Length: 303
Length: 320
Image 1 (tube, rainbow over the protein chains, first blue to last red):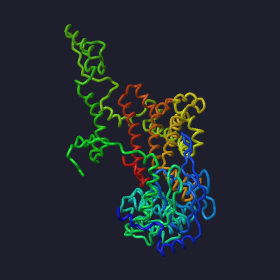
Image 2 (cartoon, one colour):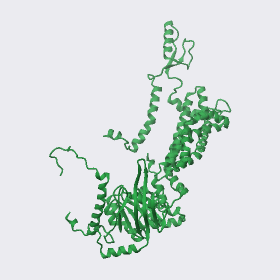
Image 3 (cartoon, one colour):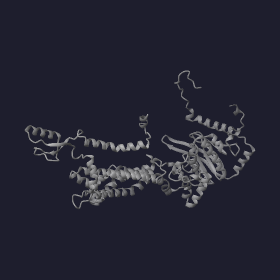
Image 4 (cartoon, rainbow over the protein chains, first blue to last red):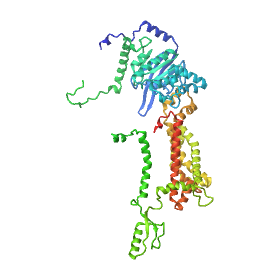
């Protein structure tokens, strides 16, 4: 608790970090979201899921989107992917408005969504094949991608034979094989156990470093967001609006050891402040714990 | 311990327990049949006359009520005449297992009553052909329509309400109509099987198609899959194992329409054999023929299930 008082501000950046952000911002804007709104028609009337969302992402940026449940972060990424249409506003990818899903935006879902009837290799080839790459060329590239994610030995295995982490690596390779401009990830590691998740995060950073890809990554895990992101977009719920776009002051390359660095903790404190204050406004946050009567015997205490 | 394990809800059984129980499921009914047939104390409401004695209307091999036999025996005894002899017997419509078992062989070796009538194997083959064509014709239209209904909501709404209505119309009711249109030979029989199968088929396959994980379609969309590719590369391969299972169930369904279908127009096939044998009171043959339908049906299904495992090595739901 005492340590928190002495933390630097999350807005303080070392020269090195500031220089990196300058470089980042000097790169082209790849994704531009303008006054984006989404309203759902329900039986009870209209629900505003997203309202006036505005942000820009630069080429090769790693953007994380966090927010409490119900803030519309999944809706937002689905609109970016073209799987849902916005009610107002615009999404521009390299200046061109997004209309429907397309190969220029790859997506990785929480539920893996590998095609169970295709082998690992054929899964990775899928995007290339539907986009009319020749079978041989698709196969050659797929094998390259499998090598990159270290699963070339499993090329002929079926998805059900893989562990969760391996499935998600294949899903990432499948999305990247299509050479999208931007990779959208919707809580991709949410279903994995803690150790696998940590390994996958390191993997993802490694891949991101190696290839020209911009990543938009949704998570509800604040440590994950800070560990991965250049910038963190914080949404608040009811309606989903941008609360703050935070530049993560933690230097790169990132390591697990940085979790206890001052910059990291300062950023996390700020995120918690933003998220728990908005969560308190929601019904879930409002509801007090019911007072429980004691059912264990008197004197039989665990604390 | 063992009991709680066996009767846990959805208990996992060992392979040995599974095959043992499966074996018993056949053995138990046969055992009951054996007891009823071979233990004279159980049922046996009739007496099979072996020697009529002095009773003038008794004949050898005649079956009479036990009460009548007792009455006649008592009368003969009282009047000092020859006593009739007989053994306890079941009605003629319940032959013993060994008779039916023998009929499985003799039914094939016995020539037909009249020279131009078909042998049993010809009758069976005829039935199989009727089923085959009925099922194939139904599937040619039913499977694609079902997949389209399950994929595209407008097509579903345009066709399914009517199909839902039509499937309640009993297929045999169309028999007379089918004869008027298609003649008296195999046409109307195949038509009845088609009518009986098609409408269920569309609805079942539409339902199966709808159950495809929507996330797979979305994943394909984000990979740049378009329109018809979505159907050919995601929807169809995605539902294939379930579709195959549906088709197996529907084929069994088609078999249940066979007997009614074969009665339409000129009676043919296994139905002709059964009715003919029943007319001559060759009940072991009747049972044998009925069981043959079951054996062919179950046999086909087992073969198809094994082939399914070969076809769809990725399918995880096929375990049971």
